[in-house]
Image 1: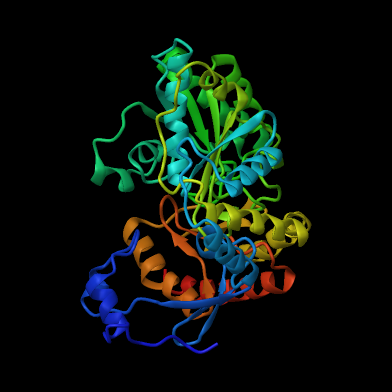
Image 2: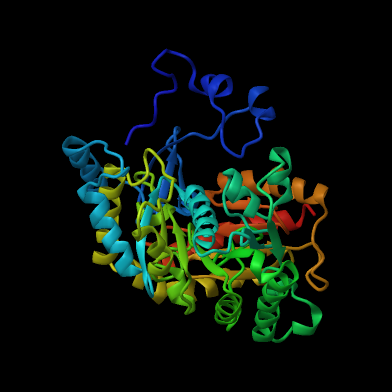
Length: 464
C-alpha cells in the first residue's frame, strides 16, 4: 500500500493543518503548535499499523483497547457499506430497526443471568452515564429516592461525561471540570503489588479485605443512600489490576446484603479481552448492569451498550413510566450491523478461545522482563497487561513526578514507538506500560513485543 499524500485536499501541508486545526484528545499541544510533528497513522493490517511514511508498528494497544479482530478486515467494511445502502440511519426513539434488534438479542444471549435488556449508546462513557442514570431512577421507582450515591475504586477511569467523570477516580482529570455530579465515593483498588504489608503473601485475604472496604463505605454512607457500585473486572487505570480470588464473589454478597446495584464496567474487558464475551463470566460473578463498547465492533464503527437485568427493566413495563434518556446515534444501524459481523468473525475464528489458550504464554513471556531492574511487576489477565516500572526493585520505590515525566513522556513513549511498538506509557498512578494487543496474535508476536520492551527498558534503566 502506498504512503499517504502529505497535503490536505486544500493543498496545505498536513502537519501544518494538524497544528492549526486539529484538537486531539487527551493530548498536550504546546510542543505541536510550536512546530512539532504529530504521528500520523495511515493504515493497518492485522496486528500492524503503518504511519504516513510507510513504517510499520505492532499495535500493542489495539488502537485503544478496541481492535479485537485486527485491522483491515474488508468483510466489516463491506457490511458497513451494504447496511448504509439499505438503511443509513434511523433512531431507536420508539422505533426499531433490524440490526439493533438482532444485536440486542445476541448480547443478551452472551450476558450472564437475567441481563436481557440492551440500551444502546455510541460509546463507553455514554454507557456508564446511562447506568448511573438508570440506577438513580430505578431506586426512585422502588420508593427509595435517597439511594443516589455511587462507589468506585481509587484510580479507576469510567469515562468523561459529567456523571461518568464523577465516578472516575483520577483527580487530575476531574479538577478542571468541577463542580461535578455529587455523591460519588472511593474505596481501595485491587493492586496486590502495593497491598498492605500484612497481605504480602496472601492474595485471597487481600481480595476479601478490599471487598470489605466496599461494605465499610456503604455502611458509613448509609445503605439507604447508596445506589450502585461501579467496578471494572480488571481495572485499567493504574496499570491493569486483576481481581484477587474471591473478590467479586464477596462484592456480590455485599451488594445483595445492602440492596445496592453492582455495575460491571466492561468497556475494555468485554468481547474476548479477558477470554469470554463478558469478563464477569471469566471471574464468576453476575452483575446487575454491564457497560460495554470498544471491542463490540473492533472499532470499525462506534457503538456502546448498557445491558441491564430484567429486574431493573421491570418498572418500565408499567403504565407511562419512561427512561427519559437517549442518544441520536445510539444503536446506529451501520454500527449494529458491523457489530454482528465482528462477533461472527470472533466466533468463526475462535478468538476468545485463542485468548484463553495463549493467556498464560503471554503472561510468561512478559514476565521475563522481571529480570530488568526497572520492572517491578507484571500483572493483568487475558490479553490485557500492565508492567509497573520502579526506581528501586527491592523497596518498590516509585518515581517522583519529575522523574516519571522524564521517563515516560521524555523517553519511553517516543522510544517504544520508534522501536516499532505502539502501546501506552501511563502515569495515572504509578508509572506503567500497558499492553492490549489484537486477539489474533500468538507466541511469535509475544516474543517480538517482549524483545522491543526489553531493549527499550534496558536503555531506560540507564536514564534513571
